Image (cartoon, rainbow, N blue to C red):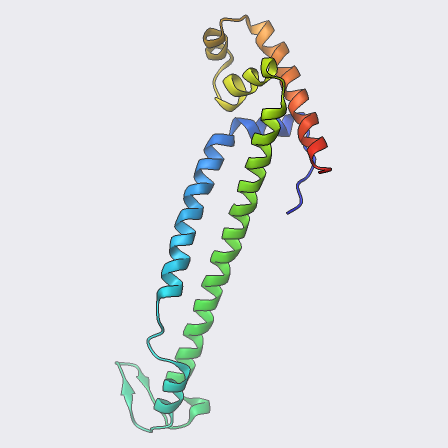
Amino acid sequence: MRFQMMSEKEMVETLKYLRENEEDDRIRLQVIEKNLDETENRQQLITREEAILAASMPGIQYGDKVMSSGDVNHDELFRTLEKSNRIYHEAVDDLLSEKNELENNLQFYNRIHRCINKVRRELRVYLEEYYIANVTAEEACRKMSISRALLFRQAQRAIMAMTRIYNLSLDD
């Protein structure tokens, strides 16, 4: 995965929704992994070989609508099996694609956390208590016992430092 440089504005948005996005993506990844396990454990109702054998026997009916014609190349049962396999593989491909995307997102979040830990502690508190906590300026000022002017000044310094550290980390 290739990470891209971010502006300070993009960094603010990333930090603002970091916890929520990270939690949502972890939950979605668990669901997808469970779905993949269930899909892989699910066995086909009928194998390709069984479909060919059944298709070669004229006049056999399977269920209400699928009937063998006796011609493997034009058999409804065989076409149904092929369509079922195609749908199955498309579903697995979609799940794997989404799983890869979520794993990439989690790598991104891990990089963000590593960068946060590199910010000086006196600035990191502004990232954690204001941006990541996603609270209003009043709430952050009250919690940190500081003025709005100091909050905004230090929060801006923290974002500048965080963005610089993140963008420099892309060279690693």
